[in-house]
Length: 148
Image (cartoon, rainbow, N blue to C red; front, side):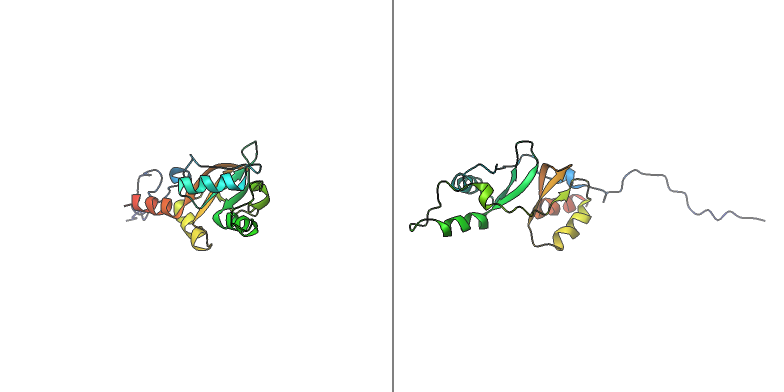
């Protein structure tokens, strides 16, 4: 007598619950700057919206840098004796241009490892060089919470 040892057959139930992607949780309505914006106006925007930085894009929507609170503080230090930034300073002169980005197609669990291996709390999300969103550690925590 011959028995079959195929094992138990499982129906394909589609994507796993853990196959959630950055694109499902990223923020797409984000504040951006251009290199021509004044640092003073950018600082006012950061303060108004209570954010610590924002991506800098060119006229085609390509990510070219990030302006952070630290970048703004550098302008204040270089400012006049009354600790006010130079009104003519441009974002393009102070932004960080070596920006680490994340792909919208990365799973949330891979993204969590990506965050752990770097010191940043948020990353711009790009697709074909264009800025499509922003993902934060808080977004990932919300995503993991949704796995339950």
